[in-house]
Image (cartoon, rainbow, N blue to C red; front, side, top):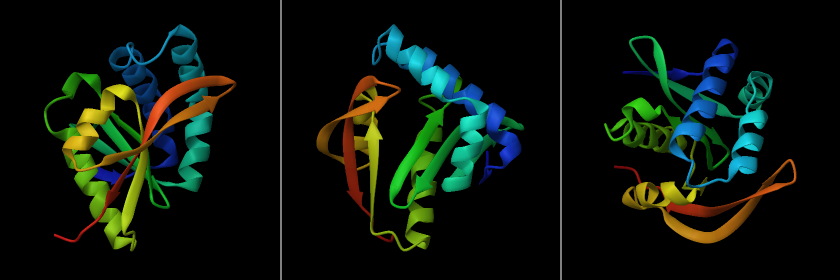
Length: 154
């Protein structure tokens, strides 16, 4: 697997990964209105704009985009793994990668917003829930969880 910094020309692939992963892996997290709103929000144009304001990395296997993760200050953002390869360690590898990158950027702790189905994964990586949150996107609410981890150098 190759992990590299995202480029603007990756925006279409990232958008497809986000939309496809959300539709196939999170159907129990969101109702139809929430899912549709999320898909409409994650357009290639919006992804390109996000690439300008955060550090995003892409994971490739055989030149195919299989995962993405970003860091905006001390927040993990845009973390997606293709549903085809879930459970094979790629998510763990991306979390480890971004934590090391954050340490290199002198971050002492990380925060993230987790879907209900992702909480167990993050807990297994020593993140803890700080509070439940409601994320609003285009006037549609999503029940999520803010999570936190203090970083230590290994």
